Amino acid sequence: MHPGQLQGFDLRDKVVGVVGSGHIGRHVIRIAQGFAMRGVACQRADLRTLVADHVLLRMPNVVVTPHSAFNPREAVGRIVETTVANIQAFLAGQPQNLVQRAPRSV
Image (cartoon, rainbow, N blue to C red; front, side, top):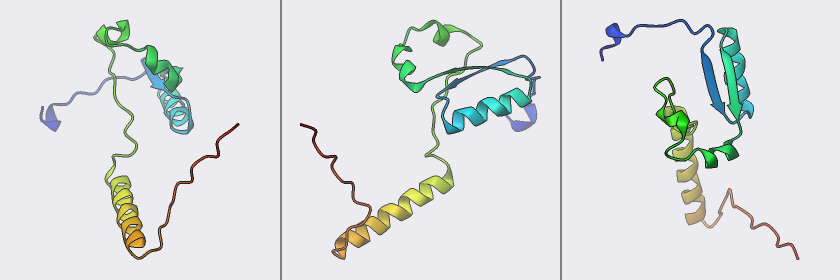
């Protein structure tokens, strides 16, 4: 579809579903309320119950999208820069950003 062929629609009284009501989820809900939308939220753990044949996935007015906060160009750039710096530090004998193993509980 050509961008000139896109047609908008009124968001008032539409329902937005937000999976995860953490930092980003709360902002999405707040913004949606600014458009007079209604919000439905569930925690990410609830996704385990959203199986392939779930009724929501069969509804024509439901769009399921992945959370991809890691994917913007800036974020990918930071990931690459950090990875290169970690490799260079390791090769120089000065590893950085090490992950410490959690102590075992007895």
